[in-house]
Length: 152
Image (cartoon, rainbow, N blue to C red; front, side, top):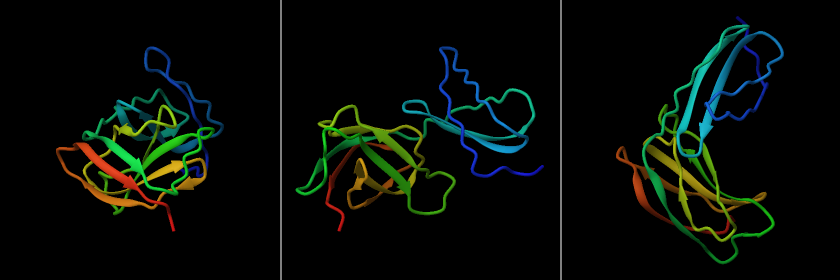
């Protein structure tokens, strides 16, 4: 079947973990699900078709704290995120963005990352810090410490 590109649909699960997405058209679709604590999962589905079940992968533990160097933007009127991007082509590394609960929060915990090399950044609105490259080991890490510097 033909693959549809550029089609995005978003939904939120109910108490039973079920979400319903309205898709206009037929074809093969990549369905991706994520949860801040339970992790990520994906599958391919041919439509029209039946229900799709996705099992979320919590990945390895990844948590820690950070500081912001002088000049890194932190505006209390904008959302604050810590973003993780895999630096190599690997089935284990994936993009994850964690929205911090408040502008003053300086700790993070992210589910769904696999072991591997990542570039982590602090983002406030459109402004992003310089990336910090680190390796998340196979057993995970819960004591990471980053100091985000202003991007040049």
